[in-house]
Structure formats: structure tokens, C-alpha cells
Length: 603
Image (cartoon, rainbow, N blue to C red):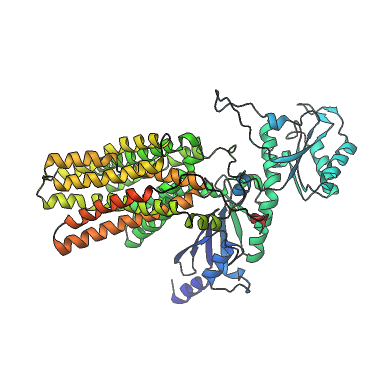
């Protein structure tokens, strides 16, 4: 390619933006015209500084002031996944909706299919209905399209007008066999338009399928969420001008902003998690076939790094929390943590076996195939839409929750305690093998020691998770940290031998990550589930900071003094301090401050 052609091609390139607008944070990845990748993270709601995080991020990257127009000619495309509709559904902040249905079927959607997820439950809690009012209309087709009774347009007009006069502006029209014979639905839609309804969802357009209940539920969701979504899309599109704007749908595909409907948006954000699994798998395959340094960075550093960020403990345990009963939440946290640890234990020898028999490339391809299993398994973690505990509380923004957590001494103590957990864990993982080497222990011992910790950790995590549902979590955490200090002290005080090393690892394994389910469950118990991932993520950041500190400090002290004695003493002291910090924690759930009656999703 000639220099002139290259310069022209570079000049013709434009910015591209990929945005994940979540309920807590908005993540933006941009490709500059010269091909560089830039990432930014902003709070999704920060009304004191900007109206919309996605637009603010684009302005920041393009270096454009608030009063300036975004140059659409410099943007190739903006592609977004958003949880705006998801949050509106969970928090019941959608548009008040009128259900228009055949006479005699007023309660059909309420009755539903009579599924019994918990067959022997004494108290059955039915899901809250999205529609606020029902208009029954005489008129019906049979399954073959014969008109059993004519549509009473006068009665329909009266019912729609009464609902409109009472302030309703969204209507969901669902009739028996309307998916195949839409004449009555079309006539009712025309009446709704004439009455003045601004959002009209008809079942034969929204979900042209058999089964009244499922088709009706989908149509109601569409009418309930589309006004919220339309407002948000119009807000973003208005700022971007003629730039191409696309949104991720629940099926993982992209659609033009003008065709983005409420029914397709419920899993717009979560669908990105499944796409992330695909991204991780593709990243591993790319890594397996990388032939240059930039490919190593792009596959392992960027693609796998970004895709894998959706599977951290804070995210996974917050998902588990929404799928299990509160009375058994800590146990299920423990099961999740134990299974994760078990996977780590099994994956090391399995990957080593694959490397020996299939080479590095084959091992990475096999690992990518295993990652793909996340997609079908994620279906079972989609959450229960009938759980609306968060919606029954007053709406609270992320900043308000963070401020409440900042002022809660128990949360600060938990965060400090988890720093100690990270300090202990990574000191052992990073320096214990070297420590044994300095004592001239057998070469097989370090690997066996770490494996022993992993195996007993399975039992310890499960045990303390079970206990956490029956006894005070703060006292269990205090006991855990104190026992760690005791085990450390006894180990360094006794003569070091192969037997004492294995006994130490056996004992410390029981106390290893048993703190994870207890700590995360206590955060959820104090502040609820709405921002659990964020609050637990902050606590986990403290854990990672403790991990870094022990790895760095241990190495520095060993290089300076030639011994690990001082870092052992630090570990013992920190264990005692952490045990004391957990004692004053108040385990009573906190309540948010009364919030003003504003519509966050429309602001």
C-alpha cells in the first residue's frame, strides 16, 4: 500500500464505542481512528456531574465540552447493552399499564399456568402483576378464525377513555387467538390511538405465538417498559445526532435504536455476560494460535481480561443471592465458593495433563470449550422475577447506598477484616513454597502442602457456610481470624518438619476461604441485594489490596532480612486485630433514608 493510500485510509477511520450501561457502573471501550483501544468506567448515576454516563464517557474520550455538539461524522458506531429496562422491571418503575383482554378473561394472566416451583410451600407468593387496570371487551374469535361474538367497539371505547382520563397512557392489547386472527386487536389499537394512548402494544405484533398467557405476559412487559426505554434511547440518540446507535437485545444480537423494544431489552445487559463467555472462549482460541507479541496482549490481556471480569466472586455471589432463600443464603454462598475452589483444584492437574498430551495449543482449545459451558449454565442463574423485595423498599441510588455504607462502622470493619484475609491467603500462596525451600524441605512438599489446603478448604468453607445460617456471622468471622492467628503461632513456635507442615496446611485449609460466604452474606444482610455486587466488590478490593501487600512485603522483608519471621509475626498480629474488629459489628439490617419521589430512570 502506498503512503498516500495509507494516509487516506487512516483519515477515513472513525471512532467506535462499545458500552455496557449497568445499574451501578457504565463501562466504555472505544477504538480510536488509529486503532488504539481505550477503556473508561463511570458511575451510571451521578446527576451532580452529568445526565447520562454513556454520553459523558463519549464526550470525555472525544474531549468535547458539555455545551458542544458531539461530531456524529467522527463516529462509526455506538453499540450498547443496558440494564435500564431490567432495573425498571425489578424495581417496578415502569409505565402504569392498562390490559385490554376478552370479556371473561380478566384474571387469566393473574392465574397463569399454576406452576409450583416449590411444591410443598405453605405460603405461596404470587408475582406482582405489571398492569394496574383491566378492561374486558366483548368479542371473540375461535381457534379457526370464526367470529363467535362481534367486537363491541363502543364498550371498548368507554373503557379505554375512562382509563385514559385516570392518567394511564400505556395499553397492552391481548385477545384469544389474536396471534392468528388479529382483526379485533387491530381495531382496538385504532381506538386506543384515537383515545390518546402513547404506548400501544398488541400481542400479534409483539409476540405472534400460541398460548394466551405467555403471549399476554410478553405484551404487558412490552407496554410497561417501552416508554421508559424509548425515553432513554431518545435521550442518547438526541445527543449523538446522526451517529449509528445500536442496542444489544436479550438474545445477544444488536438492533437499531429505533427498533429497540421493551420486550427485547430485559436481558440486554445480562446478555453481555453470555457474550463475555464467548469472548473468553474466543480469547483462549486466539491465544492458542497467537504468533506475535501484540496478539498475546490482545487475546490474553484485553479480550480475556474484559470478558472474564464478569465472573468475580462479588458478581457471582450476588447472582446466587437472588436465586436462593434468604434463610439459606450463606450456605449457598459456601457451596458456590467451594465449587469454585474445587474447580481450581481439578483444573491444575487437568490442564497439566492436556499440555502433556495435546500441547499448549490443544490445552487452551480444550479450556475454551469448557468456558463455553457458562452459556447454558447461566440460564439457571437468570434469577426469579417473582422476587421483588428490593422493589418494596424505597428507591435508593448507588451514591446514597455508598454513603450509607461509608457511615456504617460494621461495613468498615468487614472491609478491614477482609484485607487481613487477603494478606493471609496470598502470603501462604506466594511465599510458603519459598519458605519451605529455605528450610531444605523435600521438593514434593510445597505442591502437596498447597493441595492439602485446597482440599480441606472445601470442607471448611461448606461447614462455616452452614453455620452462618444458624449462628451469628460476626462471631464466626471473629473465631475464624482468631483461629488463624493461633494456627500460625503454633506452627512457627514448633519445630518445622514434614509432618508439622502437613498438619499446618490441613488446619489452615479449614479456615482458608471460609470467610468469603460469611463476609458476603453479612454485607447482603446489612444492606440488601440491590447493590450487593458493588458493596461486596469494594470489600473484595480490600482483600486484593491485602493480597498485594503481603506478597510485596513478604518479598521485601525476605530480601532485606533473609528471613520470613517478621511476616509471620505480622500475620499473627493481624489475625488477632481482625478477630477483635468483627466483635462490635451490628448485624441488624439497615434501612435507607427516605428518598424524594423522583423517577431516576427518566432523569
